Image (cartoon, rainbow, N blue to C red; front, side):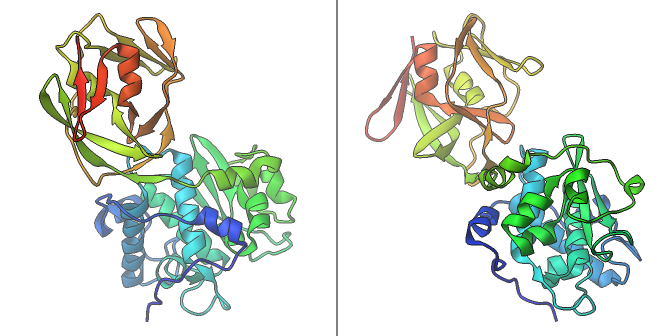
Length: 355
């Protein structure tokens, strides 16, 4: 019998809060698509003893995770953080490795009880589903605990050690010693392994003194879109909006599309190599597709705007913005003040008046 989903692990409240995730949205993953990216076969790394039916259960669990927590525009680090948070808060430590497949991904992702091997195999399955490089690692005979297992995971081309069971069971100490740490960090805890069998992890993702604070600050902020009708010189336009801290943020390309053909039209030319977002008010807007395709209930994740400089006709500005689903979003009034069009509210709708 499968076990019902459990509540948060009993770890320090501060860390439990940091691990918590908000559920909503969809990713369109299913068992077949997950199996194409994973290792679902006899004697799989997900559990050598798992039957084909149990491997199907694991694939279904991974698909459900992708549908709920992984959205377009997430960074590698955010995907890893989501997987770590998910498995650490939905799985508890099993009393015996020999019961309920506690040493497999089925134990951690389906029954929600596992020992270290189950945590590590489950995390590997989640990473495979996300397309994130990941290895399953077993301690050697020289370790203080020769039976322990964990993972090595890739973020933006660099490799780090992560031990989700330790994070789940040991709380603050687990974060400091086990969350995206280096080989030297992990060796200092008394664990050793065949380092030739996995990629080297020469540096930690965070400095040790910053690790817990950074982990806490890395809580993934999921937000859901809405739509809004905006009148541009009397003509209605419907756009996607994300409400952030009480303010609606609109895609910059939607703003450009709405004002195209007016006296306040502008073109958007991103220079990704140099991190500059060029705004040119002397040329018409160049459409790239997807503008003014308003959609509600679309799940997004907040990222800092990936352009370090926002320049309008060569003059630098610094409007507050967010990158959501690979598009930059800004407050309409901020862009209006920079470009020169007026933004008002008539009690029912936002009104844009251009030259």
